[in-house]
Image 1 (cartoon, helix red, strand yellow):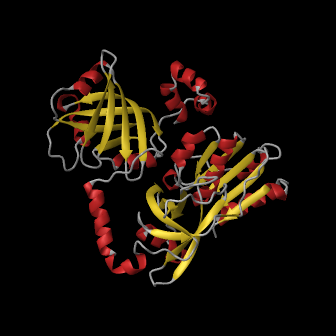
Image 2 (tube, rainbow, N blue to C red):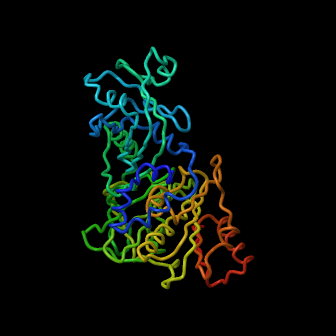
Image 3 (cartoon, helix red, strand yellow):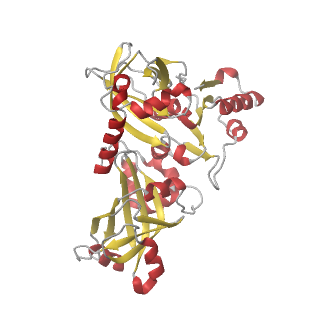
Length: 427
């Protein structure tokens, strides 16, 4: 979606100011390549289908924008096909500002929010209005199942571009339904409080408190950890990990190591991402089910067995699935150095790709994404990627065993020197 988004958003004045602020080079590649066929993936469709509200902007005849909130039961925004969405417009205060604006200018922009998971989707499109007289069948498709309010018309939007925003400044907020669900989960697990209580800490040197939890992909959650006494945390570099304690359901204690996903020379916080694997002796499942904001754990100093090279040689980063966690930190560090690199990130589906939107926004010209089970998606060609790598590039591989084995085998076949190959396995 980068080119379609850029074609709409990067006007001459926007480009001029990007140049002034030295960000033009980062975004110029958005505009390269052939025109895209705008199509909502399963990830966008699921996200849209779960929303119970959005913000909508239209343009008045006098040139002024008008922003309005629209709400309804979850799922009231309907997916009509890969490039068309729509919703039923209920009777309101009868000012008809948005409707009047659309009669004069069919351009429309939407912002859809998921506050608990800190996600935001922007959509640009062209809208047309329908009613019982113009298209009763389509209007019936837009009617929510549990609608009680009178429907005056339908708004059908042809999507011309969409884009995801970085979650950095989205404050988590929770609906009454979210709160009720969390309370029910807490009540059902009250008999396990002795094991999963808020004060379980472990025995390591650095006390940490969980200060934020967010869903970053299907079965993957990111946990923000700050010093329990408000002190600065020890610094670390890309590739580092920490080891955390996990109390299993039988009362025994184990530990797991997780990569730190944003490099900090000092202070913190620490951020780790945990995939609910469904095995792992139950450790990842315990973390997903029982780690809560306010819970305390301990860890030791970060360790690094997957260090990024210090010189100016280009880097080729290959990540599979949850293997993106140390690689994401490398992306951030290389960007801060203005170093040359390319990222190749593969997963089954975009919905299973952690930090996909953040990476796309931080530097899409460097990042390449591959989906092995998504229709009409490109798959990672290791031979092509490795053989076309810049001369003297340093390679970093992280992911499941089959990806690591294939990457190392291909590098050996191509005669890449062993000292330029680095890898980390979560096995």
